[in-house]
Length: 86
Image (cartoon, rainbow, N blue to C red; front, side, top):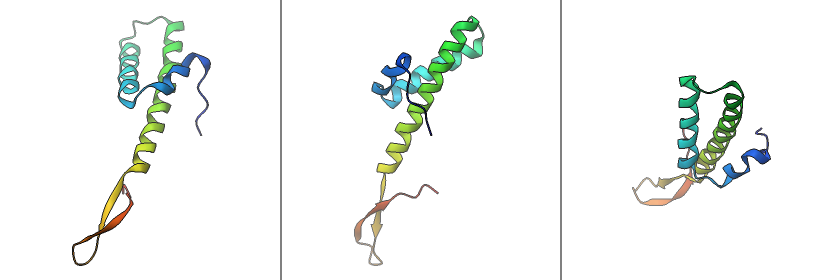
């Protein structure tokens, strides 16, 4: 279960998946370089975690909307059903 976004990260819920992922990649890059002071590292790490949760939530929502076409034995489409990703 994900925790609600803090006031510091409330803007994240408005971001598209692509924008949130791009910002998350930027944060990871900055942390990997190691040129960020400790306090800022903690702050951007927390934002990164909130971005990761947001991306995960959006991805799960998109997966739930994906459907596959069902085809009868005669090859004619009969409808749709939820996609089983496995």
